[in-house]
Image 1 (tube, rainbow, N blue to C red):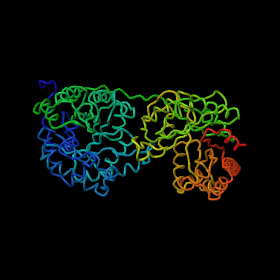
Image 2: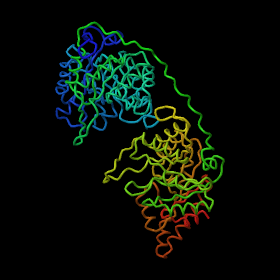
Image 3: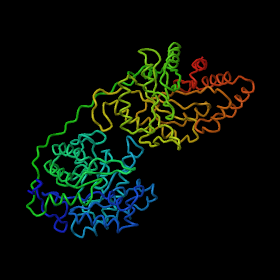
Image 4: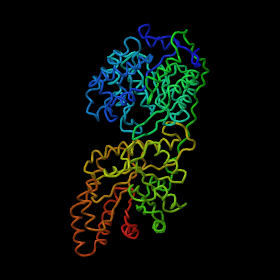
Amino acid sequence: MTSTGIPETPTVRPGERPFGEFLAGSGIALFDGAMGTMLYAKGIFINLAFEELNLSRPGLVREVHAEYVAAGADILESNTFAANRFRLSPHGLADSVAAINISGVEIAREAAGGHAWVAGAMGPLGVRIEPFGPISRNEAREVFEEQARALAEAGVDLFIIETFSHLPEMEEAIRAVRAVADVPIVAQVAVAKRGVTREGVAPGQAAVLLAEAGADAVGVNCSEALSVLDALEGMHEAVATPLSAQPNAGQPHTVDGRNIYLATPDYLVAWGRRAIRGGARLLGGCCGTTPDHIRALRQAIGGGAAPVAAAPRIIKPVVSARTPTPLPPDTKSRLAKALLHGQFVTGVELPLPTGWEVDRINAATQRLDDAGLTFVAFPDGPRNEARMSPITMAQLVTRPQGVEPVVHYSCRARRLPRIQSDMLGACAQGIANILVVTGEPISPGMDAPADLDVDSIGAVNLLVCLNHGQDLGGNVIGRPTRFFTGVRIDPTHFDRERELSRLFWKVDAGAEFAITAPVFDPHALQEFLAGWNGPTIPLIATIWPLRSAREAEFFEQELAEVPVPAELVKRMQQAEKDGREIEEGIAIARELAVAIKPQVQGIQIVAPDLKVESALAVLG
């Protein structure tokens, strides 16, 4: 035992035994620290692919590895964390996967000089996989296999699969390694407060899943130190496999756009003492850690005493809560009951007013209720205007009987956990009918974030999970939600095959009804439906009463996904000359409603100026 209270470990050198033999025995081994932190400190900009330096500046990468060897690291991670096809593609390096990974291992092996094992580092793909993303599990495994094959060919002593949040993706990475190599795998998740994964999975449950997938050691990295300890505690009670831990050097502080980590080497030593007591046999550092941190751990651990016996464990079975039974679809809402029992439904889409006053929209909703309509829809409006959220508006106008709200929910600029939180709040407010849309890209000149974490297909999958009483991490949340989940389709879009394909995946994910974009061409709608060979779901068509020739020309010229036939534009242009544009727009809309009605299970009229009477005139 050293003066710091950390048990000493024997000097472990790859020349003496394979890493698997060490892992099956006892003792503590020390990983290196952050590669990215060191490269950034040496002048490499963060917008570059650090892994490409294996080819263009191998000496710089070797220099970092050598500093960690000098600090006492027993295991060097190759500079290949993001060297998979998906993450290299934006840098034009998709065809360099093998070269970058092989070079990364060779550089680490040279720097190790026989004094450290070399771990092939693999991180997430950087894109979401199913069910919340467009990449299938098979496709993900193929991309991981490509990287793993190159690392195995280069002769790594072990693999380290790290910094994952989505456990199904991590399972595919482990399976990919197992398919191409027979060396130990260390699997590390990233966690948040209380040691749960960033998708809410408990650490013990995560450890069991990773061990069952084939990991030889499980653990945590790229997380705040105290959260790592919380996770280790849960993992220690759940699995008998060795544990690994590599925390960040404290919480990051943003200074001039750069994350600065301020935890001292002494703090990491204090953390290491607790981690070893918690059962960790593999220690190291992640973001913000440097050779100074690793040197401090090495000095504290020592390197010449007898092997340290593995910490005794009492494994407690991880018991999953029973998943509740979802509600029958036709009990979720009045709209669901009507559509699923074959009734024809009618509704109006109302724009959300600017500001917070709701008198006009309340009056409009009351008028629709008096007219006997089935639903009123609230679109998710432009983000650069001061408008109330559709969920809040729907809650304000919800009535025990009568017209029922349908909330449009855009995925744009919302992270998956935020979508989950919003949906739980909507359920608590009594909102049942949700129309999920991917959303339009943020305009280039705006300051708002333009990211798209998940599209409408991924969001539908999330709502299905919630309807089964589970969150995005698979945890039971109690009573299931009661969402009647809809999606938007553009049947007259110029890329019809893409729309049909996306509709198939939306329905496959669990969509229960669909509402179209505005339809001005009944024949195009008929052709779209003729091309559909998937499961049938109720379809509501949207009709937009044109207000002016100018508006008709805008649809014709600028909205390719909502084409207006030339003859309708000419009719509106003539109406402009005659001073009867509103009347002609309503007449056209009524003709469209009559032509479209036999093809669908409902019709929705758009009332862009809260002109409810015009919408009702279309419905007759």
